[in-house]
Image (cartoon, rainbow, N blue to C red; front, side, top):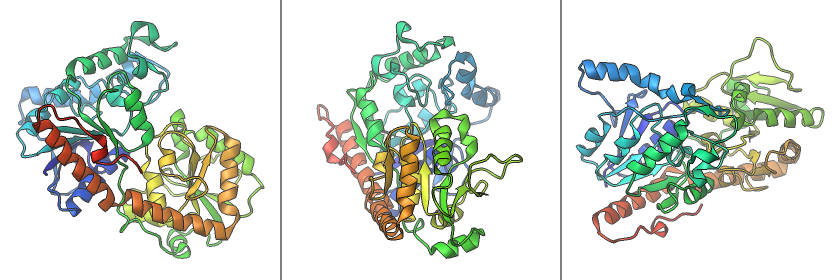
Length: 431
């Protein structure tokens, strides 16, 4: 099989990193994979960038494209602060894809006007589509808490407080009109797979659960004291790691719930200190109740691996999430994860085995999970060992590549055989 993986970028951003890792996993498994992106950040020769033949029309279109990427956010009056994609502008991607030697096209995240909704329907090869958010079965939303995606986008079920043009209904109807033939959907989490099955747009489409991959040969445990020495972190503190406080601008990230949990931990855990990744030290430091180590923005796998190994546990306070790379990376480094029992996080965390799953949106139980995880050194060592074992068994390159290889072969066979029904069991659906 020769898959062509299509994504907006190759290595910058969570969805891009997940797509690129699948690409690399396939190459290591002997699959002739290629990747096609609109914006290339790596120097990987197996990744191609869309370079359309330059003329005045193309130049104007490329100038307008990034503006259209934010059009929905400006024209739609909504309380949903997540990014919106109207996917309006046609591109040369379908022609490039159809003219390639690929046996199967593997779509990933195509926001930022990577291609239009109608462009997807112009692909004349078997399509496998890995979901990194809810956009494929929603309107313009990448994440949402309203239920229009279940009911269908009607005039009478628009959320209160939303105004101006109903771009979500317009985009959803364009998808319904253009996508007449079901594509094979892949969800990294059981939660998002369930959403596909409940959606008005895709409930009859085949969907398979295959997790994001991590290179467990690169992301592996190292001596904690050595890791802390490299990063100038205290050798004997109990270090709890989490993402940037600046993530509080997105309610979905649950930073308010994290702060509430930390407030409940004040004076309760001796030697507890915090490690914040993805943000440099602010001019005015917030009072989090503990000493804070601001690690700034780390982009390379080596630095992030060392940081994971320096921490005692990772905390993910998200209200809504798919299968965050940070959680999978922590497991691979042998670190327990503390999170709410929501979305795709139960696919990462096995309660009291690889970490703690708190009651949904309950800061008290999140704080209880931190105390339970860090309280007993022997128990903590067991959690670390279990985390590493689960990463190898469920998220390693070889495991994920074999699942995708089987899926490609089955999807291509179904596409070439009239009347043959897609069988989800062929590729396995469980973790």
